[in-house]
Image (cartoon, rainbow, N blue to C red; front, side, top):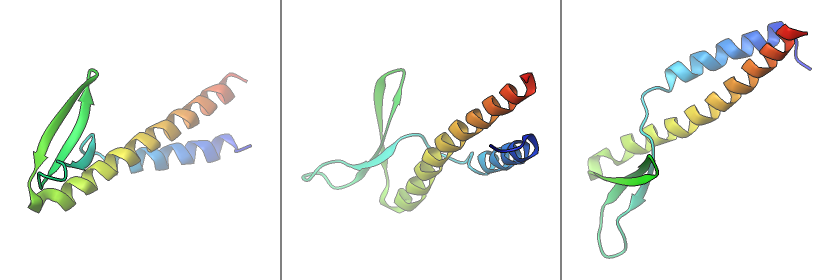
Length: 92
């Protein structure tokens, strides 16, 4: 079991990593289909799927930004777990 100080240090590291990941796009990159060349960014807002066209020259940048989104979601889950553990320890 980690000490309170170790958890607090982990929380600060996660906060820094989250701040560095805020240049993101939600969603995933997909092809338009076998008969239609090109790429789309697909995401959901209020259970409605949205699709945006990606220009070929933007492909790498968009893929990097969606990778940041996946990383950000993982970091937020980890931060929530650490915050819960810190809260729990504070009540002991």
